[in-house]
Image 1 (cartoon, rainbow, N blue to C red):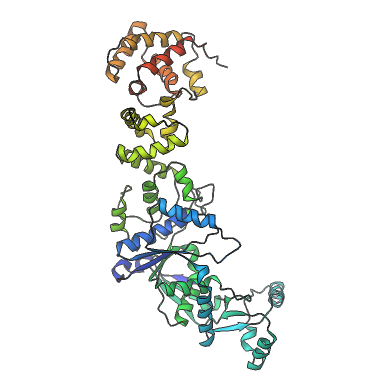
Image 2: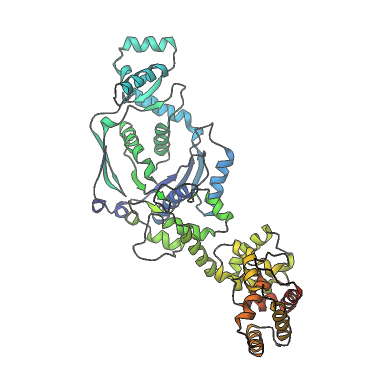
Length: 498
């Protein structure tokens, strides 16, 4: 059972931070770097940067069967994409097994741990008996009461044994810098295993041993680790080490306020990169998941986030993952970047979509810049430059069928497009203002609204019912391509509406 103080009782953590801050991000390579893990890494990185500390990356790869090199590389690649560069590491937990076992021996020698000779079958039988009697079963310390002669007999027989931590009576409390003073009743904590019967260290032993060796001062991690903390604090104290400061971050929830799942966004952060999200936007978005600068600001640079970050800004409540907010943030960053910063990123998506040609980095570069400037106000991801830019870069673009039915289905549409082509060709300068005058003059002469020309022209030129301003589209698309498409539409058969 745990007890928390009210939020007002949480100490002002940053005022108590001393020098030599050392934090760590310790992912398990059994799954890719998802949103929750990336947020944890980012908060650790921000805290280290704010206090001039060190950010350590430790890969907890002791689960050999489920760990993979592919996932390790993806975790590191995701961190590099977000520019969460570690100051030390990556270190691999599997390289320190002997140190973990030495820590277990130290606990045995100080009588804070004991050998458990119970077989799996014996433990299962006692557990099943308790369940059949309606009792909650915890390890019953059967091996703690063995005489020295009995222990020696088991050891001489050479049978396997586990090493368990001897949980003391009383309570374990700690000052969590998100939740405040948090207290657990030790009677609710089973004598947990430190070394399995095959000699392999368990999570609790390994993580405490590693954190001591790496001189970690602050452990910033998700709320899902909160129940692990009393066990680890007990280990620190048994080893005569002052525990680090703990801060447990709120869980990330989906829009339905349930734990984040793959359908909500619990996927590798690299999938957001592949969606065309800018790393600057993702960084900003993750920082606001469960933390606030204390005002309504949403757009914050890395340096601003470093300066403003504090534990006091972290909420206890779950943080809702809002994809629409991420897309909004991304659009803001797309529009804030200079063309020179944006151009290489656009180049990459155009290349991946088969739309790039080398002359776009040569004689056609000024035209590409004008295309980027045209498209970016409406772009939410980098891929929008490919999808919306396709009609400007090739004749191989899709015409939206509903838009075509709505705006190209009238019998006289072709005649209007032919007349528009003739009027535009005589417009003089190929710029938005003269093009608009030519179209509106034509509409007046035909006795129709300008919309009767604009809407079918937009679908003809871009394949869509919605686009940037039609006259800006014509200007960037160019005289030759604009007139060609309008005249092609003039010769096409009207679209049947069924």
